[in-house]
Amino acid sequence: MSKSQSPLVQSVVRGLSKQIDEGILGEGKRLPSERELGVQFHVSRAIIRNAIQILEDQGLIVCRVNCRPVVAHRKRSRQELAAPSYRYLGIWMWPNPADFGAQLMVKGIQRAVKDPDLRIVISNAVGEDWMHREESEGHFLRRMANDPHAVGAIVYLIGGENNLDALRALREADIPLVFVDRLPPSHFEADYVGTDNVGAMRQAVKHLIDFGHRRIAFVTNDDGASSVAERIEGYRQALDSAGIPFDPANIVYFHVDVFDMDGESSLPLIDRLEAMPDRPTAVVCVNDVIGFPFIQAARRRGYRIPEDMSVVGFDGLSRFIPGGGGLTSPTQSFERIGEQAAELVLQRIKQGTPQSYRHIILDAPLVDWGSTGRASISPKR
Image (cartoon, rainbow, N blue to C red; front, side, top):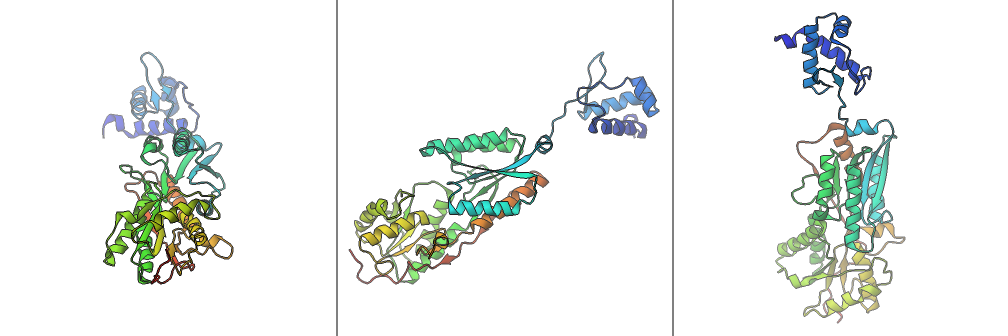
């Protein structure tokens, strides 16, 4: 054993470290003289010098020429900084807290967070256009990264690659981060909890194919989210399994008015489908937000659902509508997504940065609400 690591030196190091940790020797405070420390620990000044050297190497004290050592200002962890007042878990939710899916995710998060001293702060996008909504997301994430009270984040990301710098700021601040619904941006590994979009959509389209449908259109938005791409992939896989050629012309991009209750904004979508050379007998909507007004618009044009046209959505929002919404859909487990995400981020807060990240994928079973049936032999035109 080297002289600097002798039992006497180690005893002095432990004693001074304890005084620093307990605040007896506060940050910026000078250490007693070598003679005083020698008397306190009953050792020689040489032993004290060796102990001081070790404490300096550990970053606990700062030594300067011709000056007594002072206790260093140590870097505290985020949890230590926040502990005396409060800590919070930041939740970035899309589209807004009034959305059925968002409400259930938050409910699941609240059920999983059992610490009464851990607050939950929920925010969502603001702005009249997509660019400003993305900016509000980036602002929220960067603000969390700079807030010592923030100890974890659950993010329903809308900005994708555009807010990568804000996500990196969270990572650099050692704030555990879990994504929900949409995969993390490429080249940014992170924990994720979501739905088996590919498998659920594949099953939904197979359901239509089993009814005899072969001309099946897919109506989607122009959102570049991973969930949208995965549902299109599920649609393609189902067609391929049935030997039905995939036709890109059957992918219809359409922006729906989310406040449309009677289908008025979706009438142009009916026009586009009717203008196809081979009008589809079934329509798959990327989500229920598109599916509900589409059914209303189709009925306004005289279509019977499902006798003249079958319609499938995605999300399972019919369960929240009194009497049922009448839209057959894969049903997402929103509440379970929130609960799993909260459990995962709490685990990361407790255990620190993982060696590898987890992706938890939940099933979305198809629930028949009566909007699908056998393909019409002589479809309405």
